[in-house]
Length: 135
Image (cartoon, rainbow, N blue to C red; front, top):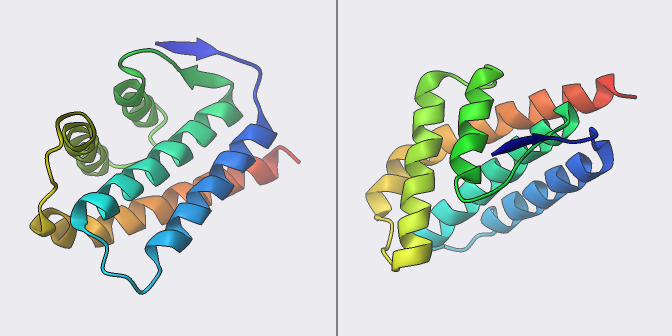
């Protein structure tokens, strides 16, 4: 469910900083297992999408909050349809990992990591622009 809230620039900025810290973690010269990498990329994207919605005075809550978060990004045309499909696929894989203990294959992260990084960079640019416009 998507609810209207008072736009919250400070909380949005905090979410961006959290995403940045996760990116720093992933940039360490460690060969993280693909499941750990994938879950962290998902969390980064989720935090950035949540930050964008906070700026717009929206918030997702409830059982399907993450799915609705991705759908709402589509309504704002933040990303291309194929990028939203990648994020939704990652959401499904992350849920299977978190709730069913299913590992994410190394091939998945090898095939998608560069695209996930580009999605993250694009979201950061969009959010920073939105935050600067609020000043």
